[in-house]
Length: 331
Image (cartoon, rainbow, N blue to C red; front, side, top):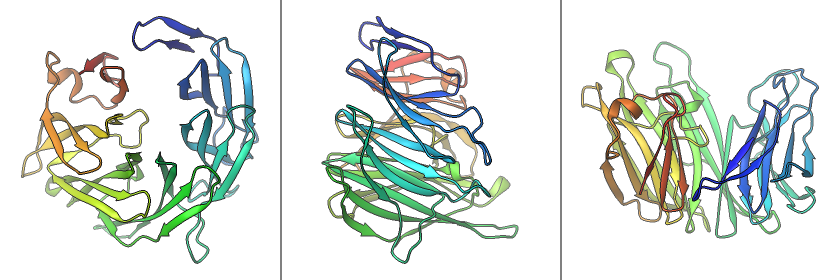
């Protein structure tokens, strides 16, 4: 594994990790890594772990997960780590149980753990996302139901909770009130939760119709992390954000509170019409853009299957992961 300084490009670390390892955070001379088992499937006995390494490759601590469990989201919180641990049963690999765990950065011991559940005892959710701002961890537990038949429809219910980061105490809980109806059975259509400046927002691609009649739009839903009440909502027709669940993916939350998004555009008849970049102010929902990267031909980035955007000092770095491997920087 190689770690480079984002400003100077100087090599900071170079050490060996397993092929299945995934870097989840880098900072202050240390790297936190998801050491996934070689066999991540029902019946596998190898256990995964979250581990922290120094830039010299020495292990600072190792948080071993129970059998059938894996960290689906990991967020640095000061020197500690906040993670969603998703645990699957031995019989199936769907609708797991989830725990929100804060791990101490000094020794890797759990400081607290909160079981994700809804009033009435519902504990199993297909997807759970988390974002942190203003000392609150916002949890979005999603119930996804799919109807049968040729015109199958998927209903996504968002159950939101605010958990105090300091001690893991729930501050509020809002069962899903608004149901988002999708014409898609692909759970990858639902993206991560972003949080900054006291506001959390999630994005979803909405598809109506099938085949030549398919029409896309992207929905942005924002709410106050202190109360869970809705702050603003936007449905943007004619755009589709690809690979929403990738991390890093086509979305990046910037330090100034803007949500940077790369997306595909379509005409009123559903035909592909190019790609663009834009940014939304996470607190107000105001949109800046769309715009196109200067000096980068559309064919080099627009049709790329996998694209990652991350903030670096002075701009946003966009990595064409599924195409040429090119990295370009936007100011």
